[in-house]
Image 1 (cartoon, rainbow, N blue to C red):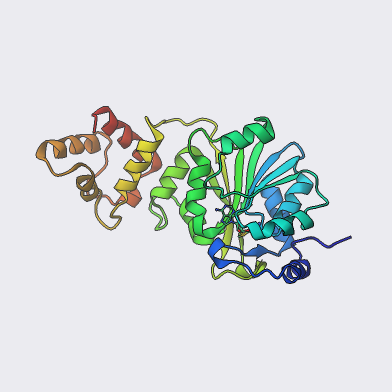
Image 2: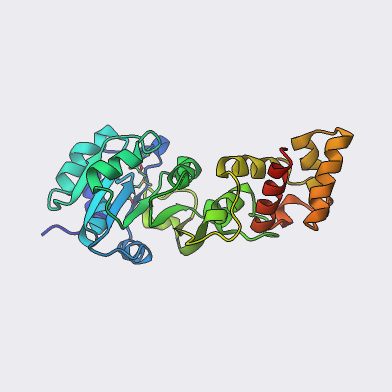
Length: 292
Ligand code: SAM
């Protein structure tokens, strides 16, 4: 009976046996804290009915915990060198499938149809490669996301941006875009010493759950995202300044912008980080209805 893959001694033994050194360029930091693994499974509310997608199984430490708790696990690993390792470490589990693919290139709807028969619940659980945290999250949430919930470890600073409220210095376009459709929470924080090798940042587990209903919907999610990004283009400047950057300085346009802001009671001198998600939604829709 082997100890858990993620136990520090076994992780080190696996790395030695396969002559592996963690690749920094692929964000390889292996989690070796069994308490953290248990708490991730809890935060994800995993049951034996769940179909789980994992991103970056590494040597299989988290995958093992997912395989024990869920119905089945589909794990995307970009590093070909890890395939024989995973084949070995995960051999006791017959409910795991490894896909050697870049998660950002994967056709998730097709894979979910082929491998999961479109059967829910479908959950994402991962210790993300930090160098692509934001693209992965935006990718998972784009379109009509089919995930019942997402539980992911990321750099603490990014987690703080995802959950930040207006007025907080971490509040930005990412907070607005993500919070518009999802309830986002930091489940718990994880110190850097919980990994081999230790990264030079601390981490946090974030849970994202799609809102059951959205009171105030945007006309078009993609257009909304680019509008919000443009509003935060210069976060030190006033909102009015950013609006000029977005719409230009023609007197007629300025008047239209002024009218929208007046209507919504938004002062042009406000900073973009003081405006709520709902206000961004209302503004985007107001500009859209004026064909701006
Ligand atoms: N799950 C393991 C754990 O918790 O110990 C490893 C997590 S490690 C932080 C991130 C993993 O993502 C690495 O195994 C890395 O090779 C993999 N990875 C990096 N970029 C990827 C990509 N674009 N698509 C899929 N996997 C990727």
